[in-house]
Picture 1: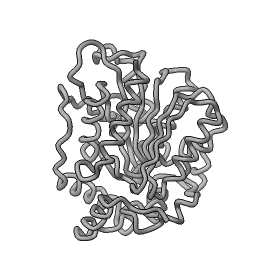
Picture 2: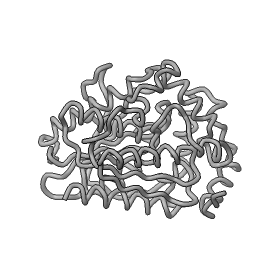
Picture 3: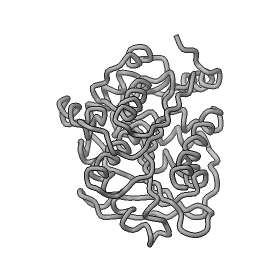
Amino acid sequence: MPTLHPQIEQVLKATAEAKLRPIEEMTPAEARAQMEATTRARKIEPLAVARVEERRIPGPGGEIPLRLYWPEAAGAVPAIVYYHGGGHVIGSLDTHDAVARNLCAGAEALVASVDYRMGPEHKFPAAVEDSFAALDWVATNAAALGADPARLGVHGDSAGGNLAAVVALLARDAGRPRLRLQSLVYPVADYGLTGDSYETFATGYGLLTRDAMLWFRRHYLRSPADSEDWRASPLKARDLAGVAPAIVITAECDVLHDDGVRYAEALRRAGVPVEHRDFPGMIHAFFGMMPVVDDAMNAQRVVWAAFKRAFA
């Protein structure tokens, strides 16, 4: 059995003491409120960026809010479109603001964080449609934003990693925009919810349990049949060849561990350049657990470095 990192054991102890409610026992509104409150309570101090701006862009189901972050860099900078995590049901621009700021500063790129529509109010494929519309808008408007349209990437964690993988496939199929890198942090790759990690780490490893994943799936997908659609489960895409190079980050003690491993392997088999980094003793959501978990920043630095190489 894998051993939890001592810093993660402290996180789980603090979670228990805070008496956070299991996601699967709440309504979507309650789960969203709990995530917002816990984020505010952590008082993270992210890296400095040059400026931040809120925008609203046209989308297939109405306007899509974006939060744009500019780095302290001269000249046309690369651009990264960022999709936050939260099971396609919870999470927001605010819960992932610190990670977005760090990505902007660390990768020295314009970051566009996307407030895509979520379930249960807006079921699949609304999030996918918004996510691709946002990528297309950033690509089209890159020069006006001070970014280089030839240096684009996508990044996401968990449900956001799912969306980043899916938009990379949509971009390949549409022939545009050309992406230099897809960065997938413990992505949901298969809403069939299969793999040994779903059994090994079903409970006791943080708030993302197997039952929480069932809860997310129920609120996001229109029916279980949607899990067979590659836009919900990119691992089920018929062909991954020709999609953007990838970096995949996984946490060893995570129900989604095997999803990330299997997707990295599938990309590799399709001839796609892949860097896969597994973080031992880590749990789901560790990527944003700065400053209490050292590997949060270590993993973020790995992602920044991958983007810098891809944009060079």
